[in-house]
Length: 353
Image 1 (cartoon, rainbow, N blue to C red):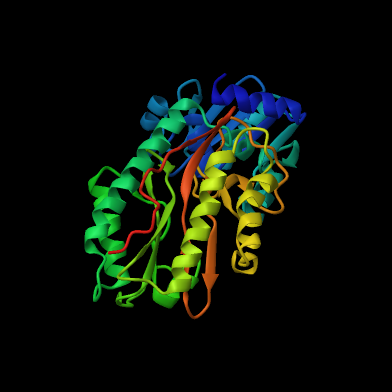
Image 2 (cartoon, rainbow, N blue to C red; image 1 turned 90 degrees about the horizontal axis):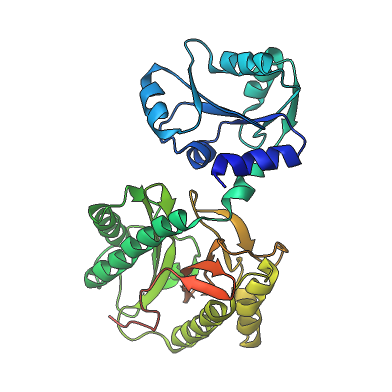
């Protein structure tokens, strides 16, 4: 079933006549369009793509199966025309993304019911096909290669920001179009900051260095974390490293279709809690990745959604001790019927540089 067909089935199930797609991520998903200006109107039987003169040729090439419409005036005027010509009585829209003013403009133009419909496409996107998984796999391969490269540059006297820049540029050299998010390089006591983006701090002997990074490849992301030690670490840091590693490996060994996000999260969380560090693991164990760095499904203490084959999630338990340092280890996993496929392959045993 094509992506448009999947969305049309979802539209029909929601008892809507059509859906307006404005999110750049969702547009890329349903149409393969990679430009920056355009929208789609997808009815239960047809698909329309609207863009201006700059992108009509690109849309005709990329948005196969869509009727391409060029807007010469305000783009919502073309939405009005589609609604009128097709006799649509209801139109879903991405209420979490459209501005209040845009919704007001739509209400003034279209003579049909506007129905909040955020999350419909995102839920379809959660299940990746094999082509998507292959693209994510390549993004992970680039991240793995970046990790191998950067190990030679982590040493006392080098700043976190220099490490991040070298890593980012190297991933681009390997074919990445950009980074998935601002690269995290957190060393010493800063490694106790889960989202400690790279700073001017210089690496010191004895520091734990947490690197959380990833890249975009052909529109899809990778996301991995490794923690290394520069010289011999503090005894408690070494202890929590082994605890986090054991928790992370337990999830890798057990995550599969049919488990809820809560159940996956508890595999790591229960172990870390048993070891006395439950309060130091303050974030969820993972999240979905794909066209965006954070998408569904989540694996957290609140996520009761059941995992299905084709979900791609992160597995990233951590322990963070203020004033001392922290550890996080992260892989990307494809959920399969009887287990999972690990896409990131950098070593996880403690590396002492």
